[in-house]
Length: 450
Ligand code: PHE
Image 1 (cartoon, helix red, strand yellow):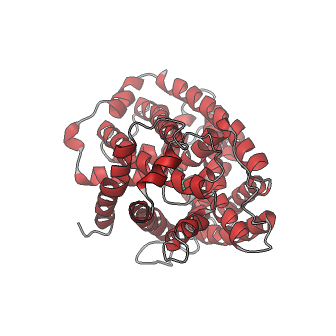
Image 2 (image 1 turned 90 degrees about the horizontal axis):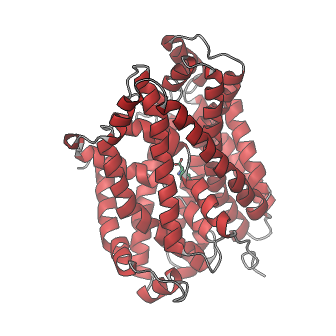
Image 3 (image 1 turned 180 degrees about the vertical axis):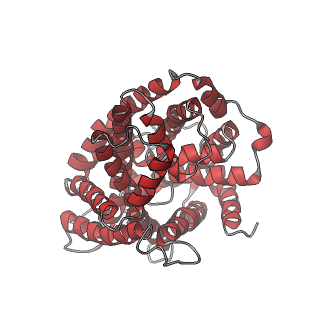
């Protein structure tokens, strides 16, 4: 019997929470706020929502089709539909992307663990802005501590993966996602009750349309892809665990909505607090690791808010690293004979551990090594999140356009006619024509060609 015949399937709630767990991650809480901050505030938010609707949801639906229709891992899905062709390269591209992303993503995820410990040890009280910046720099460039945290994060991810699809992934998502939501709402509440909070809300919600430039649009598109976990195999792999009754279009809309709501709430949590203390909202990646601790330090019981915040960040990251790990583990387990799931997971964790160590060291010890002028960490981010992801998204659209009949699509997306999908024709039109053109534009822009 093929290893895929007795595949696990998620229950109804598991479908949404596991997929949302993959989507909601550092991308929402760490990356989205600083992208918004440095791309003009509310105007970016509007463009971002447009990108989720026009590009994100159609692509999610396309990946759900591939996963549930074939019930295979990311490479297997392409092989099942177009056997013996080069199309499976799209699958391999996504699997490599997931593997490499997991390596460097775990570094940032590991930092959240350091900050959890620091919050509890009372380290943040009474530090000045300069001290926060100095201690962050000292920590992130250290050769030992961040490496240990990175590996710790990979081990945590490994434990859930090794426990299996239902007992590990589904169960983890079912308690982590609600907890994440409660923490987020509590932190939002704390933030908007600070003096002068309305300034931050204005920044987030009052668009200045003159701020919309081509580069803002392209940043928003890239962010939408990353945040929805598109083109990295996660959606194909998870949807291969969906059941026959799962409503694919509806699930895509629900997950995209949850993901966007969490990103907006992250903005509500961060900007009022930042404005309230008169700090610049445009800080880059350090917004969460330098600017926010500085804000927490000025609050009564700041250590507590800081602790809660970094737990939130760690949970969000963990459900995402689990999904990235699963992409590679499911592939190795299913495509190679005689390799058990647990063995596959061990291979993946060791490989990712090595990439994680190198990425972490590239902030300090290995800072001098550069690939096309980027540090190893930045190069990994660039090649995966910018190049492999966009190329993958483009070819997924092409694959659907050239290799899948409209009849098959309709059959799968309506569960054999059992559910209605009114926008079917529009969505298919988007997947086949609009999305690839827009993605090609982002790509050329990223390469600096236009
Ligand atoms: N979507 C996740 C986030 O926003 C990141 C991620 C990307 C997870 C790709 C899985 C796959 O942080």
